[in-house]
Length: 345
Ligand SMILES: C[S@+](CC[C@H](N)C(=O)[O-])C[C@H]1O[C@@H](n2cnc3c(N)ncnc32)[C@H](O)[C@@H]1O
Image (cartoon, rainbow, N blue to C red):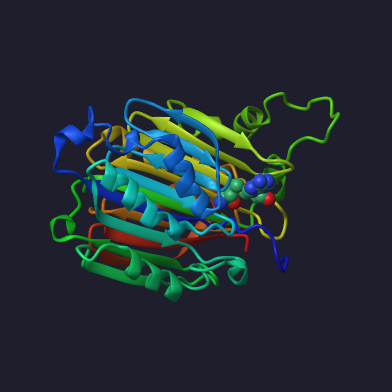
């Protein structure tokens, strides 16, 4: 493995807000009323920028120079990789939300194990430092707090979780919602090569390289109903957000040999038969794009209906479940962390 390279593992932050004054919610747009300048200011504290955006009636989805941002009326999800300082977004977001009459009621921070931990700047030099920063930054009324490192049997694959919420949100309002976060390492080389731009002057140089990557890799088929906003980096790397009604999915790829990494994340509702029935196929198609030698899947949901489907999706791909850890967190419900490796290993 390289001694230093691009850190693919993302840090992920999910913030929920509530507002008492319906007038301030402006047609229920809430946080979507944040102007672009304010968002840019938040992202500049994190050290990343918007490269592409798309929206529908439910939410706004941004592809960032390092991963993705989703803005719903009362919820923000930011996922950033590399050496970004994601936790520095919390204070400015609380400030801008306050100007819209919204207050923070819950916060969830998750990440895997960095490939290059020594390259991370403060406040991300260790999980201990991240937790101290979070404890210091989230408002006092979010007094139900928990931090945990969920272990696995695969070296360098553990799941770091911090949640905090106020008294009224220990059980989340949207307890039917599930989030599945997949982190894949050691990607199949032929699959990873498809995320490099073709050399200049190559006869088949794509006019729209991201669209071409979405098509030839099969990413476009993962959820054919989703509208896709994709971006190809130069000379390599790829990010996309898929949006379908109020659901998002997102993929980020670091294809370089020695530290190759890809992530897939999707959300759904356990009350939606379509979501539940399609989950196994969706996961299988997403992982098949990359054919990783190892991966972890973290499933967050108030119910235990979702996580058993993960192994069902991955087993036919020759991926064997090596470990499974579960824990309960205030406002998040259950988090189940599973790791898999290819049987050939
Ligand atoms: C932003 S993308 C996707 C990151 C994501 N977390 C992942 O799954 O790896 C990172 C890939 O794009 C490449 N890249 C090229 N130019 C970049 C830029 N200006 N900013 C960030 N990444 C860039 C990196 O070398 C890496 O392969």
